[in-house]
Image 1 (cartoon, rainbow, N blue to C red):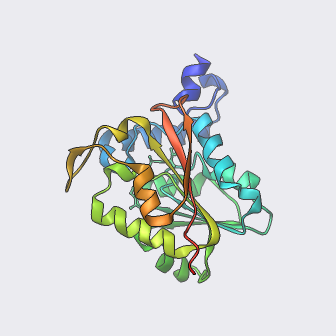
Image 2: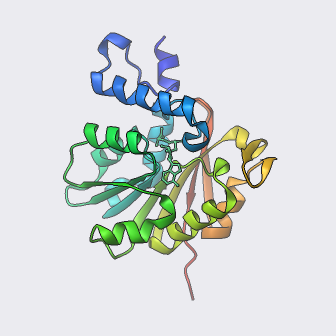
Amino acid sequence: MHGEREVLGYHALPMSRASRTDRRSFFTFVKKGITDFHQTASIVPSGRFLVNAMVDAAEPERARTIVELGPGTGPMTGPLLARMKKDAKLFTIEIDEPLHNELVRSHDDPRLTAILGSAEHIEELLAERGHTGKVDVVFSSLGMSLIPSTIRQRILESAARVLAPGGTYVQFGYFHTRYVTWTKDEGLKGFDYRGTLEKHFGRVTRQPVPANFPPAWVYRAHPRTRA
Ligand SMILES: C[S@@+](CC[C@H](N)C(=O)[O-])C[C@H]1O[C@@H](n2cnc3c(N)ncnc32)[C@H](O)[C@@H]1O
């Protein structure tokens, strides 16, 4: 059924019309999602509605530099590039080697620098690739609610430092994680995306995306302007 495929992130195409690249990327992610759910935070890539809401929130046509955290095999990377300026730059930071390799294989664009590494070290990873300035957008689909609190803290601090004044942090979080999620250090509890982002950035707005599996919020946060 088309609708199901759309929500499950496999585009709205019947199997016979989906490209081989789409299929390969999809199953690479599913395999990883089943064997290492704690890292991927999902067993399927984000669906089209969530991708569109995230990309809209980033306003990529206005950005010179975007950093995408946790791109997986890249369901949001292509749509971001499609709306970025010709001379803009996109850095992706993915911790998982097979997912990173699949992203590189399926995205051939001179504006893209795909980095294998952890989002805890955004500035260092960018500096190693010759980018020492700030960035306009940090675009994250990391499963923050499943990431141990010390690592989460380091990622958000790194993101806040690298964002330009007037920049935007974009993040999605699944509805259910407000009530139940699990981390190694904090055990079973709810995770407050909005409160966490407010602590690190300041002003936060959010938009619901119910037509995703699982349903999600898209958050936009802006760094505090220092006096
Ligand atoms: C919820 S998936 C999102 C994948 C894809 N962007 C999507 O929307 O379908 C989270 C991704 O973050 C990656 N990830 C988890 N921890 C990370 C970290 N510390 N640094 C970079 N990537 C990480 C996972 O391997 C996974 O690809």
